[in-house]
Image 1 (cartoon, rainbow, N blue to C red):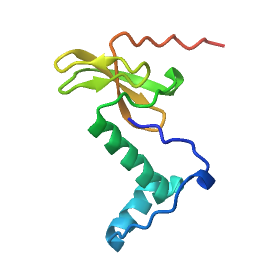
Image 2 (image 1 turned 180 degrees about the horizontal axis):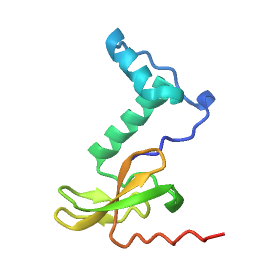
Image 3 (image 1 turned 45 degrees about the vertical axis):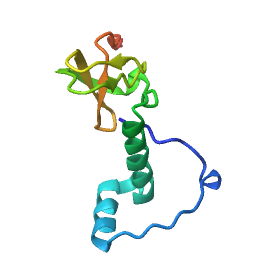
Image 4 (image 1 turned 90 degrees about the vertical axis):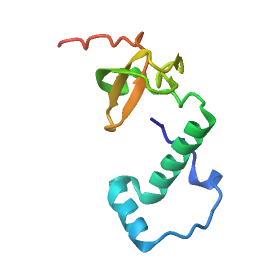
Length: 116
């Protein structure tokens, strides 16, 4: 799971890319309020991280809504700590507030919310 870098657009470079109209329309639909250019940046960052096999940018524990138990099939990195998770090791999948599943190490512990 990737957190999109929060960089002001004034620090970004303009790049021209040709896309089929159908692809552009699909990206716009998937992006919703986020905008399709931000979605394309998110997709590209995710691709780069997967190819470089570097730990993803950290999430805050408060962004994890639920967890599921899982077994890693490939090398993964905990989205909270960056800790490596080896293939065939138990792990957790965290559902983020954005609706994405991210890898979490077994040592992830979420403190129970205080009841008011």
